[in-house]
Image 1 (cartoon, rainbow, N blue to C red):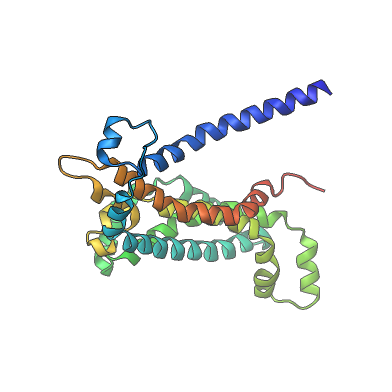
Image 2: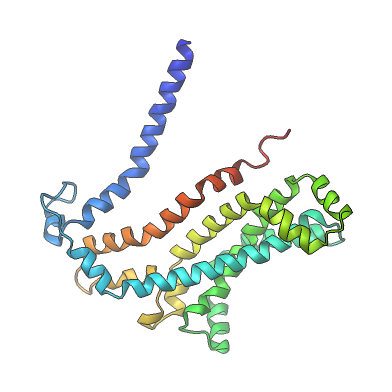
Length: 274
């Protein structure tokens, strides 16, 4: 009994320690967002005596909502396309037997090994030839292609864990391959889909280099590029920058909290076999 209490207390201590370590940056950003520049420079650790809301006003005056919409547009479409393509490819790789099955799967794994930024110059040239340079939707192609390999890797493993008897029963009942994929396998794979969606959404949401290289017009910029506007030539408005970071992180946090149960199921799927 004493050992169980000690172990439980140790687990709580470790959990609280992790909460402090990972929660402190968010608290620091939140406190800094309600300070003015002078208050931050005088003492950036202290809690302000009065709340300064000018940072939020400055953020939303700086075309922030446009940047937010652009990021949601690009990330939403890129993630949706990646899940659609990867789920079909994963279904085929996991359930169908053909000669090049392993070779095709290895090809997707090779895609995970290629550093994304090594393709920056070819993608820049390709976008220029296609007339997609300095267009928000010109980022959708690169973001989708980078998201597909890891999505296929995760979803193929998940599809392989689905009992074959489910598919066999559907075949006996006369269901087509597309019906099995759309009405049986895809709903069963929601935990994996949620995991892939959050992972790729974060990658698209935070991506900076491709957005900086392929986008020039202020109206086409995404959030990471738009936040750079708070960097002056001779000074940096740190409270305003952290306020922009705080507001930019809210959609991701909301998305995660809505899908966290599915993500936990996706991470633990296949860990226990009956």
